[in-house]
Length: 173
Ligand code: QAP
Ligand code: CO
Image (tube, rainbow, N blue to C red; front, side, top):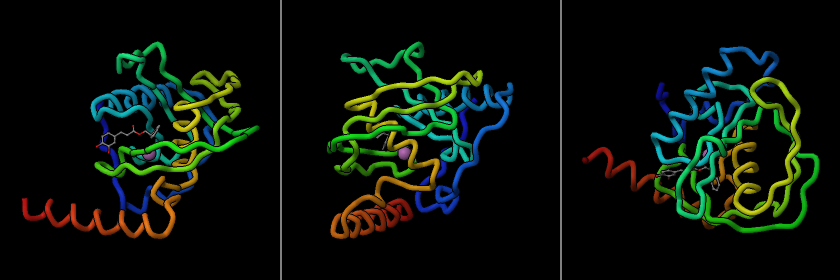
């Protein structure tokens, strides 16, 4: 089932998501719906709060070299925690909750993340490159943070201006 994605400046995106306590079928249905929703919007990552569920769950499905996404590559992370981070890297990020905006954001280059899968099994993953960026971006959602909040002052102002402009053209359309 495809769910509605909530968009900036909806205040719900600022909620701090709560830890998942039970790895029930309710969680599995939500994760399945998040996957359908993410694919329907051409996304590569989605956090539960973006579909208005304030729980610490996220999904990531990176495309291959041909740009194809494969469900067997889907990562589902419940209650993720970064145990190690090093280096720094820049990547032009976007977000399904901030459609049409892309900006270079500085992140850690490498992260080690410990999380639970949908069955509650504990997993650890070392991530670099795009996967590392995606994990950090999605984990920020769990703490109510959007990538645009990481922009330096001048570029944040530029975003606000473009956002207001896009709202105006939406109204007159
Ligand atoms: C987060 O972002 C991310 O503006 C996932 O019009 C960002 O899936 C992971 C999207 C950077 C790694 C690197 C955005 C689709 C999708 C848009 C997304 C849009 C249509 C964003
Ligand atoms: Co996002």
